[in-house]
Length: 535
Figure 1: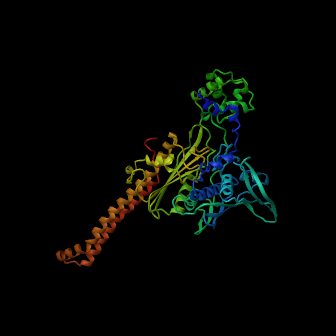
Figure 2 (figure 1 turned 60 degrees about the vertical axis):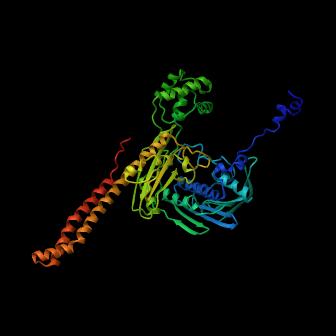
Figure 3 (figure 1 turned 180 degrees about the horizontal axis):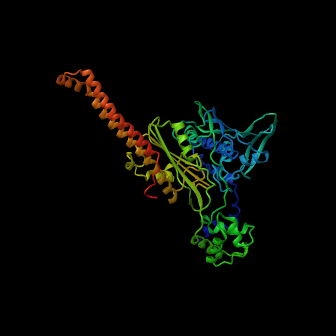
């Protein structure tokens, strides 16, 4: 070792002085791109998305038909005031500052039931972005409908990840119920395929029971509700054993109130009966009466292995709230005005122990001028990172030519493909929730649903082509009816007008019956769901 290296060497004690803990707010302050704030255009979309998602979740959970108002107002160059208001149940005072001013705070992370948000970062991330870019505080108005409105002005203390309340007032006498948030941020407003207006359009399609009013810098746009009822309310479930890994099992064993392993397995998990729990313990070589707190690491490993060898019932699916075929078709028809629309809701299935369900809709023609794919998870549009998404991979994996549509990865036709995944835990590829991870089971379910809808579209298009061929033949006969009548007049001496009229009557009877039969046959075929040969 040289003299110079000895002089420059630092001790572990010296290096330890530079180590310190950071809060989650400090982490996202430096890594805001992970939350979807990559650039100023996307930032506006992310804030609207988080606010609208919260509004829809709140109104649905309270079983209220949503009325949501959004305003984006440019107040300076690349600086906007955003207002989002809903008619939900409101927020009690004790929760206001935590919901908006504390990252990773919320109820959705801990509950296994379908909801739009999952991590408890969304709206508080928007508050953090506002104070980072403009230094402005966020203003919240909320009322539970009891004549008192709370008016809060706040920021986030990034060092402690705690809310910093700047103003706290109570306004008496205003009779309303709901929540309004006002945020001033840096951004750029554009209207294109990955913009606020496109997000709201897709949200209106996937939530056809909502009224959405948007005051944009370019004028007002209204998305009227198409149906007057909400989807069924999802129920909370317990985790399923097939999705449990060693680390999670270890933590749950230490936290459980169960007195025995048998009691732990039958009460802490979905659909584990006494017989299944006994089989797991037997295969793992564990006494089922032992206390969960006394289980050793090696025994936990054996128990997780044993779970994979025991046949368990699938988790309950009442934790899901799919749109249903009715709402998918109502949403697509309302916003796209197609000439043909069809949809399917696949039966629920499971990945890693989590229940999920795939719904697909295909809309064709009408006001649709080019092919597009709408990707959604728990009724939330996914506008970015399409290349990394299981939905895009499933769409590209369908042989569209087989269904009478040209094109490779996507049909070259005026068609909109709508794919929706409902799940208690959507496997997003990042915290910004923009793409679904490519689990084999998920891709397979999407492809089966796409094939089913594509088959119905193929039958419809086939009917159109047949009708066009018949119509062309009919036009030919009608075109030459006059010349035929003239020739027959010369041969027979009968009146040519009478002959032409008789020819046209025969054409009408002949081809009119064929056209009607074709229409009835096509309607019957497109109304019948056929089992896919790959099931």
